Structures are given as C-alpha cells and as structure tokens.
Amino acid sequence: MKALKSPLAKQLLSNPRTREQLRQVPSSTGETRVVELRNGQTQHYVVRVVPKAA
Amino acid sequence: MNVALPALIAFLCLLPGFIFRSRLKRVESTSLDYSPFGRVVSEGVLWAGALHVVWIASCPAFGYVADLGIALKLLSSNLDVHGKALETVASQIPRIAGYFISLYAGAYLIPSIVRRLISRYRLDRYDSDWSWLFRFNDAPWYYLLTGADFDEDEEPDFIEATAIFNVAGEPYLFKGVLDRFYFKSDGTLDRLVLENTTRRKLNEDKGPRRRRSAAAEGGFSAIEGDSFVIQYDQVVTLNIQYKKIDLASAAGPMPLAAPTDNAAETLT
Image (cartoon, rainbow over all chains, first blue to last red; front, top):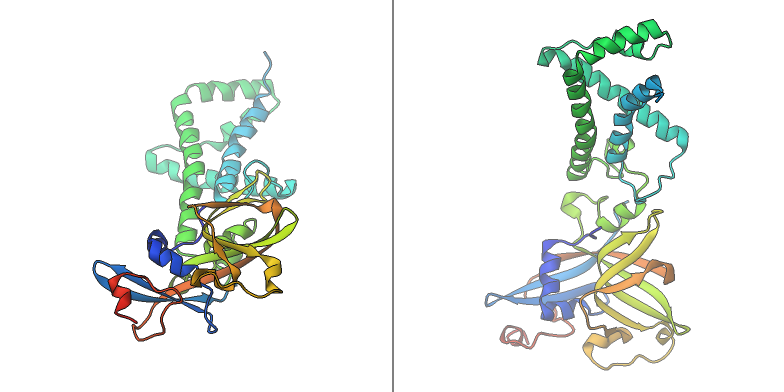
C-alpha cells in the first residue's frame, strides 16, 4: 500500500538538491528550510512537523 | 448423484452477502479473516437479505415479478411440492440466471464503489459523524500510514519514519521518508519501504557529534539508493512523524546545506 505522499513531496524528493536538503536535521524551531530551483525561479519551503490527527 | 438442492439454494442465496461483506471491509489481512465467526455470518446474512430486498423490489422495473413462494417450495422436503417448484424454475432459467448473475455482480461492484466513496469523502475519519458506521476498525496501519484520519485541508505532505535496528549487535537509527508498506497474510506489518534514508549509531547520542558535513549534522549519514527496505520484524521501535511542506518567504534563514547553483548563491 502506498504511504501518504503529496505531489509536492514527490516533486521535492525527485530533485537531488531538495532531496538532500530534506535530510537536514530540523532547526531548534523544528523546521527544515528547503530551496528549490525550478524553471529558473527559486521557491522557498518550510518543512515542519504536524500533530497526528487522532 | 444426489445433490442437497435446498442447501445449494440456501448457499446461492446467501453467497452475495458474503461477497459484499468481503469487498466492503478494508482489512490488512489478505488470507485470513480473524473476525469472530458469528460476526462474519451475521453480517453476511444481513447483507444478503438487503441485496435480495433491493433486487426483488427492482424486478417490476424490468417487467418481472419475483415469486418468493417458488423459492420456499424449493426448500421444502415434500417431494411433490419440490417437483412442481423445480418445473416452474426450469421454465424460467434465463430470468433466474439473470437475477443471480446481476446479484453477484452487484455484490462485487457496489461495495467497491461504496468503499471508494467512503475514502474519497473521508466519512471514516475518526471525528466524522459517520465514523461509527464507516470506519474500518480492522485497518489501524491504514489510518496511521496513509493520513486517512487527517482533514483534507490539513493533510501532511509526507511521513518520516525513524526505526531502530540492531546491526551486528549495535543499535542503529534509520530515518527516511515512508514510501510504501506491505502486510503479511495475517495482517501484521511485513516491511516498510523508505526513501531518502539516513542512518547513524544510536549510541552516538552519548558521544561527541561528528561534523563531517552539514548533511551529517546530528550524526546521520545518507544511504545511497532509491528505496530502503525495513523488515518490520527486525525493528526494535518505530517512530512516525507527519510533515507538512509550506511555502516560505525568501527572507527566512538559509537552509543548513545551501544548493550550489546560481539561485542559491543569490541568497547568501
């Protein structure tokens, strides 16, 4: 069965640069920052932990 | 050859209920259903009854009237009554065959569609008004690892799994993005497939951290490869984290390992 993975996560994981950035240990605020270069433009993302739904 | 015709008829009448039940349930066991026998039978008979009611009620729409008396006579032990009922059935074989073929097809297809709709509209979420009816209580891993319990707007983007393994007697921490998971035939978790995996020794928590590179911050080193398979039997503990990716302003702090392309250089 496929695990939860959004199209954006797939996109970032398919790019070697962003993939490497996703491996970073989160900062003290629990966030990981990711910069993606796509079609000549940079896109900035923040990856953070969210609480479980139930 | 003697055939217990009443038993066969009862079986043919009840079978669609069991087909319906097995297709509607989302279970993590593929070969064995550990549901109590009484629950299986009662659910199967209940669904069979409901399907027959719907099919019999819809017969007039096709220009037929279902005569339930013939079905009861077929179950009779009186050979005279039984013989007459059989003659009636023999004269209507195409209609009866059409009834049962459509019934079996419906018992297979309808629950598949219902299950898809339940998942699509998240009627089985833990806080849904309909969860008491639609929640698949036999599939706990499904809810944990697919994010089915999240509201659609708040759904995380991926799951990060961290597992402790014993490698040559030493505990290692493996961390990665969960890609897929598989079950054994008895419904227990068989293996997890991770990607973007890193690892480190667990006892490095106690010693000074190595700082080989920014990527190795925290002692983790990357594992080359697309998929990393973890046998669940060998996992000591498993940690699950749901992670959300949001757009950020460019004014935020730099990532720990900045990309080396021109775009990244403009950020420095």
